[in-house]
Image (tube, rainbow, N blue to C red; front, side, top):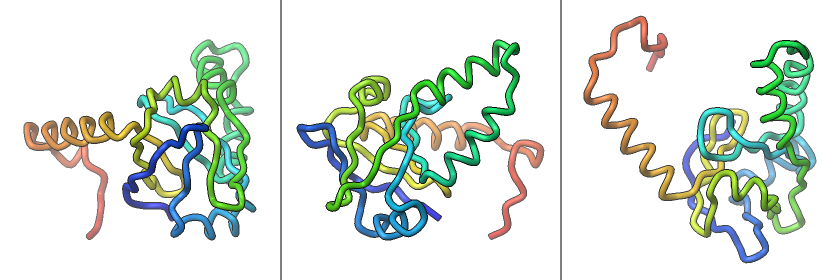
Length: 151
């Protein structure tokens, strides 16, 4: 389980260092083999440990080849998927095309989203959080809009 937002930097070669607390987990669960692709809804990247990506890939393969929405989803996710591997120092190279898509500069946030990570430009992340908090404060949410979370 990956959780939390971690400040990281993009180096001059386009690499990020995965925080130490996640490296061993990634090496154990997928031998450091990961897939990075674009996010369908947000201006960020999604980082999948290989086994979780393979589950999603099987679902994507089951989508219709004649349905235009299904084709679009496949093009976006599969067409941008990049196979990567953690180096011995826990770094991974983010391909230029993916960095450009997400508008990534030097200061980033690696956010745990359960089984995957999102990679955000730091300023975009904080702007999104500000908007999310504002939206939550402005609306009264009924039970039909909220999941049944137990604390």
